[in-house]
Image (cartoon, rainbow, N blue to C red; front, side):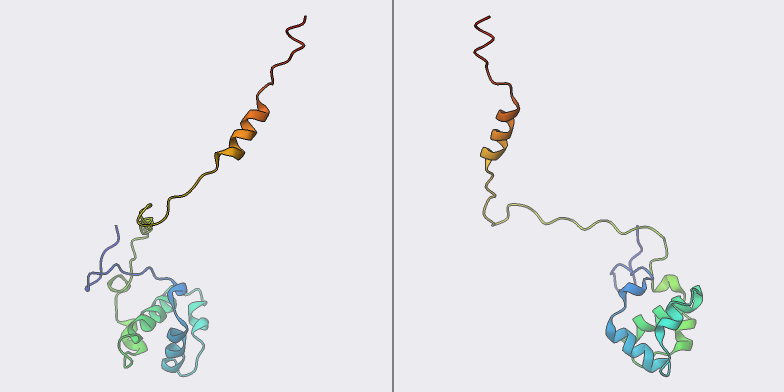
Length: 125
């Protein structure tokens, strides 16, 4: 099971797909105009993780720096267990909505068509 963060919420996976357009804008400013995708797509795990830590921390603290991001253990920010999060719970059915109407006529017609019809020829033999 994934470990909750200090604020009690589930930690995110280290996934670049969780970055927002504003995350990219803040990263460009902090990286002095450098394209964040250069680091995120570099294939160097340390650069990817450090960039993600920087992006997530810049959301709450605009003064957070690249060097500070490098000093933070990834497991303190991200779920590094490798476990998949549990699937979302489906909403309960039948809560205030109209009941679904099923039309049985089309399915009965199909079943009736596949059943053999009584033949008058079999009784005259």
